[in-house]
Length: 434
Figure (cartoon, rainbow, N blue to C red):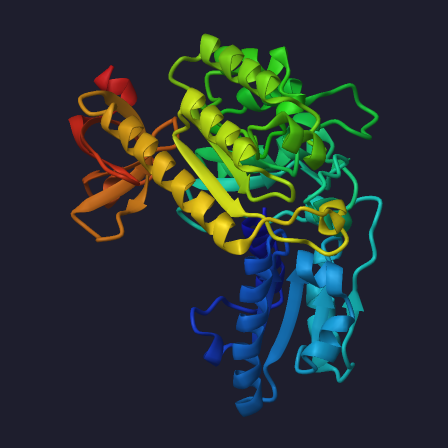
């Protein structure tokens, strides 16, 4: 979601005559998009802002702006900590970035906008894809009403606001006309899409409408909340051809005691029931998740229940993190904080276990033929290209620029820890191969 907000901000500034550069030291304007969901992300933001401040000391004309969740949380306090920051833009004021840059150039000192709106600007701003872009993000909602005990999102992104479906369809239509083949729908909890809209629509109905858009071959979405996974959404994986067989479904902890303390709204048994319902429909469904290790009060027995759940599900991938207090959240005031050394030990154990399952899943695809949407050259460059399967696996294989944007059949020859290696079948696209 932060990536999409960065793209939208860049698009707005390009309309003002700015052009992207890969070197902050050469920039006329540096805009730092921040995240505060974890302490490490916050520390990285402050560190980078400090480095840009050194550039400003040598080039006083450089404008430094801060946007995103940390900007929303800190507001004008940012100027006290880092007076070389020129403006602060909160999560609902993305459209104000060009105005604030102009105000700074005109001599205004420290403009800031962190007010919440009834309708966040990030849902109203459109940004056309760059030439040759194959995949694009599309915001469908913003904010969250769940108030998980550890999560800062409702406080910095606001309450749930959904975007009218016609507006979403219109943007996806224009993306398809521009050559985009894959869209990823974004929201803090896409499963509750439709909240606050006058129209009678929910997330499965939106997916069906998007599935009819000509030119869009693949639809993905993130993030989902387990308690809101409905039977209709499960059925959508069977009913909508363009909906990819991949789901990111955070479970966070395997202990019901911890889940209740987190205010997650489901039990481990209910989560496993949703997984079973999904896999009964699509046995090959790719699954990834988020996990928090060392939540306040998590005992060794609680942690073992998290391990037990991982062993039962065997995810394709997992994003796991040590718990860190977020000021303003309920969990920040909880007792029973877990020692940092113990958190690190648990995280290392969990990640090693998951790495084995990820490799196991990748190696199980050896010898299979997968549909791969070619995105561009591989990291090593030509003669290799890279793309993703419908199950969101990265595949590298021999090819050239003529394949960009095409969906081809690739036989998987090797499964590695983080990607797959393959050989293109018959040298043609999916339709001609089939």
